[in-house]
Amino acid sequence: MLAAAVALSSAPLAVRAAEASCDCQQSVGTCSASIAVKPVEATTLGSYASELRFTSSAPACSKVNYYVDGTPYFNVLVSGNTGADTIWGPKQISRANITEISCQVCRQVAMTPVPVEKKPENAELKPTLFDGQWAGAGSNSFGSAQRWTLNFATTAAGKAAITGTMEGNFPTVPISASGTVSGSTLSWLDQQTTCSAKLLTDVSLAFECHGQGSVQMVMRRQ
Image (cartoon, rainbow, N blue to C red; front, side, top):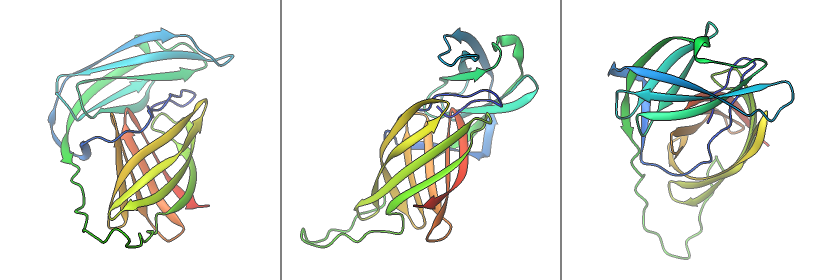
């Protein structure tokens, strides 16, 4: 999960491969959505936690927009019509703190594998510009600070293994996934989270993940 808030945060999802993603830059319709709030036990002294449960009338690719105490946030329900996220803050969040809920249906995008050319078994596998360790820090769609450290390694033509960690004001989350390389972009998916890394130079890339919340940052080669 990537969503959190200014003075609110969330715990992320581990990474696994999926088959579709959502392009919320392109809206194909509207939907109706509801948000339920359930207080949960906080583990950090002086902070409170609440679980948000989202339900949409659309079967998939719903972008739920809402305000928490007047600040705008959103979550994307990629592979179903329900989802959940945990937010943290200095005060308890209740349903009364959430207003102006709206919902749009994003265009579904199929992730098609890049054809892999057959090569002799003893052919040397050439690394790509992605290979190596990258690190970056930024805030997610709720304003919660996160630091990502990712290692990319070519496993086959057009394929790469992604490992690393995500750190924030929650327990460190290990990352392990398989990705597809298309030109200067490496993409991978996990449950309700779609991630991509686009090379800017040979030492920097634009990284983003969208799912139950979003995060964007520039990562640099270590």
